[in-house]
Amino acid sequence: MYACETCPRYFNSWYACRQHMNDTGHWGVRYECETCDDQFLTQWETCTQMFHTEGAAEQHMQAKSHYKNYCHPCNRRFDTENNLKMHLNSKIHRGQEIFCPFCNAAFTTATGVAHHLETGSCKRATGLNRETIYKFVRSRDTQGVITRKLLEWNEDDNIQYKANSRAYNGAYWECYLCHREFNSLTALNQHLNSPVHKQKLYHCPNAKCRKQFVTIAALFNHLESESCAFVRFEKHNTILPLRKLIAGFKSDVCSYGPEIYQSIWRNLATRLLH
Image 1 (cartoon, one colour):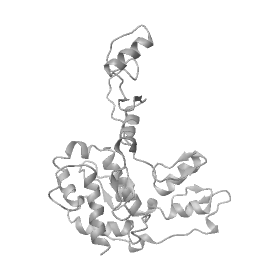
Image 2 (cartoon, rainbow, N blue to C red):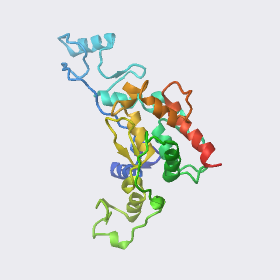
Image 3 (tube, one colour):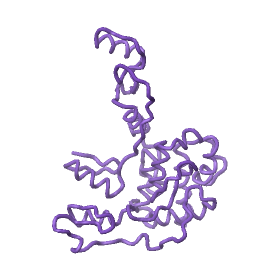
Image 4 (cartoon, rainbow, N blue to C red):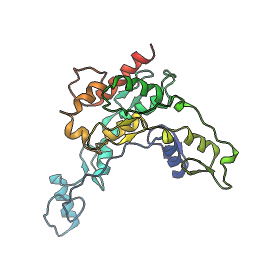
């Protein structure tokens, strides 16, 4: 069985699982490798000491904690730094400390709760989706810290699309926009109604990055992954305007963490549904 990286669904094949995550944007957070250029005799070593046997080297690395990518609490080592980062940022270590303010569902990352709300998956917030969240955030983000200044906003962006028999090319169901092929009409319709072909509403607050995103969940994923180093290196300085915007627009937020994402959903709960 293959598990979706975001929702609790399981699939009999990796192909079906991958197609589901592609169609719904359910891929988990990915982290770029930041390994230095230093070279060692093996991927586990962090010193240049030589040993005659593998057992002696293993004993030394265990005694000195010289495994390069090693989780001490779990007593596990990983092939790459990237894999170790993914493990440390999983629910095994981080738990599920970010909650949906409407249904109280628990998530490991801000990306998870953002996706939960933007896709209308919360049964206690049926009026909340990608469009309503964007309208609210845009109305508060007057300086364009994370929202794009669009020349026009398509109000029909939340319309549900449904393909017909003409989308079948004789072998697969084909998307007429990107020409991607699917095994079923249902899968094609899921693709058409996903954010894939919708407007990019947000951008990274890092002036050196400015990568654009279709959903706020994708933006949070980008920030949480530290792929452009904005949060890690600038969280005490240029993160301030973003913190004021997202963290419930409260100037007294003094630390960066899950609270910055948690507060925006509390704010949405009190402002959008009343």
